[in-house]
Amino acid sequence: MKIFSASQIKDWDTYTIKNEPIASIDLMERAAKACSDWITNKCKQTNTFKIFCGKGNNGGDGLAIARLLIEKKFSVSVYIVEANSKGSLDFQINLERLKKISPAIYLLQTPKDFPEIKNEIIIDALFGTGLNKKPSGIFQQLIDYLNKAKATIISIDIPSGLYGDKSSEGNSCMHSRYTLSFQQQKLSFLLAENEHYCGKVVILNIDLSQKYYEHEKSLFELIDINRIHKIYTKRNEFANKGNFGYACLLAGSYGIMGAAIMSAKACLRSGVGKLTVYTCKQGYTILQTAVPEAMCKTFGNTFIKDVTNLNDFDTLGIGPGIGKHPSHKQLLQTIFKNFKKPIVIDADALNVLSKYLSLYKSIPSQSIITPHPKEFERLFGKTRNDFAMIDLALQKAKELNIFIVLKGHHTLIATPDGKGFFNSTGNAGMATAGSGDVLTGILTGLLSQKYSPLHACMLGVYLHGLAGDVAAKKLSKEAMIAGDIIDNLGEAFLQTSLRRRGTKSV
Image (cartoon, rainbow, N blue to C red; front, side):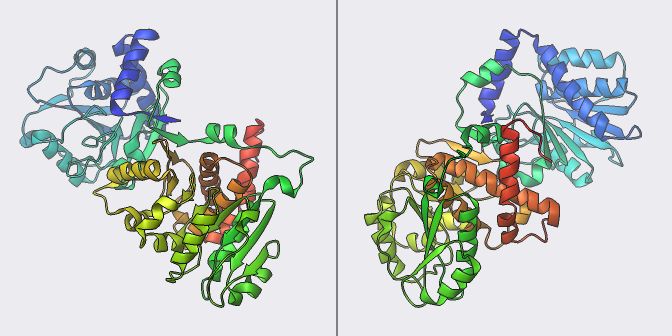
């Protein structure tokens, strides 16, 4: 699913109006009906509403929603912020329509006019995605006032004060319980810095032009099941293990063998044909016992000191549990020099890499690194906010010709061609030790199976998150551990393959 910028969303509306064709006031009615239908299904008939409107088209949405809720016998009061403007044409049309059925329309000129908030539901229709400057004056005062009331707030399109595709740091923003947005996700909804503003985001279909969507390019996309269907490759019934790759993991050291075990198990569960794990001598028995399906080679007593014959493998994954030993600089140098296929770099390997900037440019082309935000900061420096972090990830992916999997709730894949993909699966239960080691194993296994680095990243983060979602439903987010993600990878594959064939999963 493409993620458009605020200006592209405006152009999408304009294109739909011109080419459907449909009058702009009727497109606004379509959006208002979608919102009012959702609100009607969600709220009780005894609920009362206070709707706060600016004078732009977002305010016009609010007026239309008010009229539709009144027609459904809800108690509604409307408050329009008087800001020395007449308002948009569609706002004025909807205001006249509302006046015919309701006298409960009030103008807010100063904070003295703000109504008392008791048990009403607040509908926020002050600003839409077209906001281009921070709220000030009476708008800022109203946003702060409504937030302090601690009422249930439903924002239309986007929480007022929040920008659609840049940081809103320093803005007064509505703290919404729900955000009813249109047609597609917005970039702001996918970033952790905006979580406490957006609440639960609900995407409502208002039938904007499919032709515009198909032909318009976007810098970002959301990885959804439709995209995964195009990536996932069904197995040939006459295949053998040689068809599914030979992977190598360099993982584990004394006291941290759990990371190696989880990564190895996940790699095998991802469908790889054969796996060898390089580890230390003290971890040999542990690994052979816990993961008998994997072969094992040892170098060093308590941590990996050296490796040989790497070119036998289709790909390598390095990092889970290897520790931060100074000699690992030499280990990375050896791998980067002698193994020219894409590799997966995670965990302690990233921490070692961050200390030696001279190694960055020798990372094999098209490799995958998988930092969490703190690891990313150690690698590339601190950023002001999440948007700046995304920009830096895209820049570094292009500069180093690698894929950066920046882990988070909506994990970002930054690609060498400058495009970003956000994941749509996963949950907070996956914020647990070992979850990243599991992802490293999955990515290594998929890369070995001849998925392209981009497709390995996309399918890998999607399956990782989906397995976590399955586990959370069974166990709760609180009780989940990383091993539960591995245990449910099979179900994640089943759900993906069943949907691919058009069969409803059980």
